[in-house]
Image 1 (cartoon, rainbow, N blue to C red):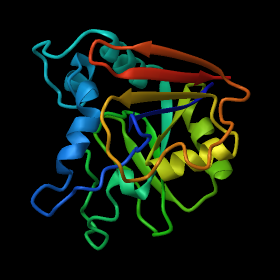
Image 2 (image 1 turned 90 degrees about the vertical axis):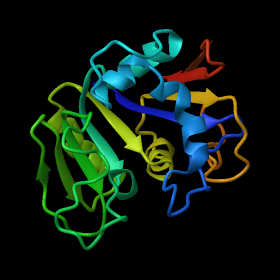
Image 3 (image 1 turned 60 degrees about the horizontal axis):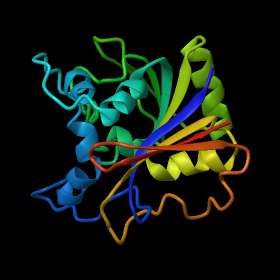
Image 4 (image 1 turned 180 degrees about the vertical axis):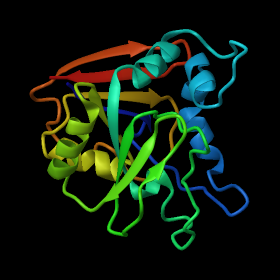
Amino acid sequence: MVVRVDLNISLDGFATTTDQTPEKPFGEDWGRLVGPYTATRTFRERVLHETGGEGTTGVDDKYAEAYFDGIGAEVMGAGMFGLHNFPDDPDWQGWWGDEPPFRVPVFVLTHAPHPAIDMANGTRFEFLSASPEEALRLATDAAAGGDVRIGGGPTLTKEFLAAGLVDRLHAGITPILLGRGINFWEGLRGLEAGYEVSAETAESGVIHLTFRR
């Protein structure tokens, strides 16, 4: 079992965007940051449920496919689930629609009590207030030998990295400059110690940086 992190960051290290508006809740920068990933055939099949074979099939798609491969459980923050957006709506089931791409147990870390949500495709969202170590123990048990992914957001991911709980970190570095947001590397000085680091550049210009124990 491997504890994994996969995320996209900008060339200047930012893992979040700040140009959201009510009219554009994701903003334009988010599309720029994750565009090479969302253009892949794997993303379009797994997340958008397209079946026509559209999408890129190069290096970016190789990492997109690896993103889903072998995952037995996931841990994410309330923001990534979307809990903060409609906190008083008991019927709100997150950003992910009726067929979330996870298909495994997902543990959402939050201080707000919330009943579990079972989706038809095997995804189960469980909500808990727990430390990274406690959440990882629960996710490891639920994964039944599969890998555990720490899905994000970046603040939660950094807590797991700082606690030494992550075995493999993959960062897709998109060649754009954001200038503001949450800097993923801040506070993680010396992270490379104890990892083997490799890099591969995709046709899109994204640098896929991987830290492995």
